[in-house]
Image (cartoon, rainbow, N blue to C red; front, top):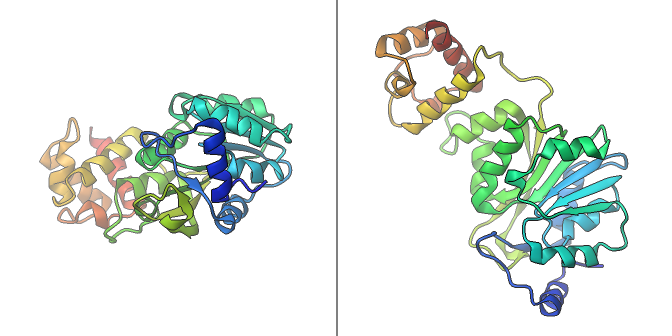
Length: 284
């Protein structure tokens, strides 16, 4: 079944009286080449369990179910559930979960799959891309990777390097948990309805070991937020917003970390943020 074809999507909408929800950021993919790139990019294998976020009418689900051992598709829109069930009725390895991914205990589902290898895929609503990614990573999701489509601008920020305009708090946060690989560029023209922005697909390979040693992980993220929260300010000034600190404490910490206090957050590497937070932690 070619679920990705515009005529199929139109027929489904007419049959079920389905209306696209702007509030849920629903845009359905219509390009088979992009679909194939996502599935291949996710590196799905026969023994894998796949957790899909936002299956829509089941376009990616249909392809994943042909390869993976099990597919769990989490869809918040209850009006889509009968459509997905009908479109995927030929598969006995697909389970549809009508829940909000942000309220779901994802690790509980993963544990129930009984699979040693779990891949997460999805076409995320633009307005909650970052909250979903950070929830999965902060919850310590027990998956090998997260391959997702998102707004191009968000993808650019996630994979950005120090010193670039796109580099920010989300860059450092995601790169602490993952290595990042770009899988595909996706023009706005391959969606129904067509969004106002282009998209990109990234694979976030979840690190088995973190790239830096931290004495206080919360403080590390607080330093990142403080630094980028006032990114025009020097580190000496922006980091003073950290609770319990002073100008002298920050100055001493930066000196011990070997970081010039006149630098700004966007110039710092992940390793330098770690060194600074560890030095601040010693002095708190």
